[in-house]
Length: 201
Image 1 (cartoon, one colour):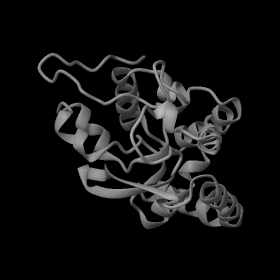
Image 2 (cartoon, one colour):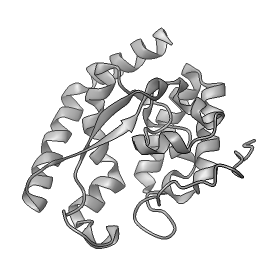
Image 3 (cartoon, one colour):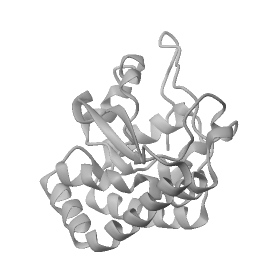
Image 4 (cartoon, helix red, strand yellow):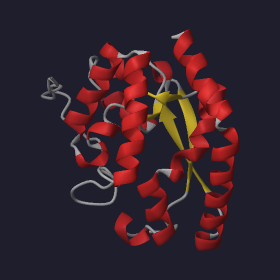
């Protein structure tokens, strides 16, 4: 949608002084807490399944160990406030991402999706999305993907505005950040022979 692209680019450009300042402070915090590298890079699947390298602020120490052991106090704060996602605003400007859309997942997951689930790649991935304001990491993979598919089928500027407002509310409340059994979502490993997407009302 050209209107969506224009709308989101305008928001990012107009708010640039604010988020650039916040990003500079966050980068300094990561550097002093964990040193280099400051950025976390990973290959993710974007529009049409095209692979790109996503940028986030690093929140964990390098090395082996459980996520909860490597996550620093600074990293936990960045995640709770979603400040670790700020570098992705540059992806919005470049057209690789949108403000609102299904979250871009690791490229290795592409082969694990059913044909129906692959429809989540019919739109540009977002910094926030319908799944993020309806549970984020606190819901299971089936529910999360079903919410992504619901968004793809019902997307509109009005829905995007609603998601943006709800995102700020969720960030302020700090809800849904961690999975039930850990700091982050577990690996997406579906049984492709038996998997079915749950219906979302």
